[in-house]
Amino acid sequence: MPLFWLYKNTMTVAKPLAHHILMRRMRIGKEDPERIAERCGIDNRPRPAGTLLWVHVASVGEAQSMLRLIEMFLAQHPDASALVTSITATSAKLLAQRLPPRAFHAFFPVDRPSWVRRFLDHWKPDIIFWAESELWPCMINEIGRRHVPMALINARMSPRSFRHWKMAGGFIGEILNPFSVILTQSSQDKHYFEELGGRCVVVAGNIKFAASPLPCDAEKLAELKAAVTARPVWVYASTHDREEELAIGVHRDLRTRFPDLLTIIIPRHPERRDSLIPLFEASGLSTAVRSMAEIPDAATDIYLVDTLGEMGLFYRLAPLSVVGRSFSRDGGGGHNPLEPALLSCAVLHGPHVQNLQDIYAPMDQEGAACCVSDSANLADVIGTYLSAPEELNKLRQKGYDFAKARSGVLHTVAEELEPLFILAGLPVLTPTS
Image (cartoon, rainbow, N blue to C red; front, side, top):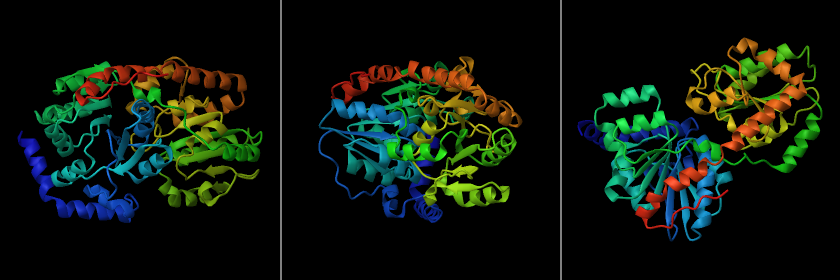
């Protein structure tokens, strides 16, 4: 198709620009300088012997959702390995902590034809799981040319994206064609993907429901519990721009009712620490910073958690959470509320959760989460729950029950992937508990 031809040829001649962008990203900390060659499709590590599953994820959240599927595959294919790719340095650090034995991480190459060919020539995957909807045309087209069985898992598409792709004619159809199976989150997503030319499209549900509870270090949790003791505590998790200021305002409003209140703030991007510390200092609130090995004491108002991979620790420490990017300046979208719910941490959120509406809407309807439609009311709602332990415990229990009741989605996904395994000549996955 003309659009794909134009894209492919543009990416072919754009080598100097690609190098320039990678170098710029490296200077600002968005690329790992020791692994920058991987973004060009170069990797000196040998390919593991035997079957290789390749899983591509776009974000940390997607990686967490796919871990149980990876673990299931490796448990049932003891001679196989799993390659997991992502783009961000943050996701690479988290995956290094959480991937099981026989699974390893590589950076996804920039979508230039020669670089994706080099990547595929080296790794030679036998079967591919592509998570959600980050679609790279050159890579997907080259996979199709090699006839490697590939599934698009947890696929979703917003009405806006659907309208944009419809205007692109057959371009999206050419991208979707190499997928042997497309498993969507909802019937609306199924309709969109079929309209755009997807084949073998099945509604499997949201695999985020299958994720295991976030891990934590038991000794660190005991240390923090000893430091916090009986103080009222809440956590604002995965914050984006504006939400830290909101948390400061909430803390100030609540101090008259809860003089020993501890507010824990966990920015989605820890590298924002340098701009946040002056903000907290200017507020006059006493702040401890986790990356500086500081532990909150009785005088600490704000605990800034600027580390990676410790969200499970703080969802266990605090009985109440506000899930970030639901009040942010960027239009919001919401982060995963199932992560706190699975750890019996009550879920509050703002109105802007459109990216995960299929999770938030039923949670709110069933009383498993609480939507605060106006940020001006957030302090009142948090204060109400902190002063009413029985109501807070009800919300915690309902959230946990909601998350656990839907964890069977992994069985559906495993069953719907059967054609992919047959095409790959591999034993099919057997759903496990």
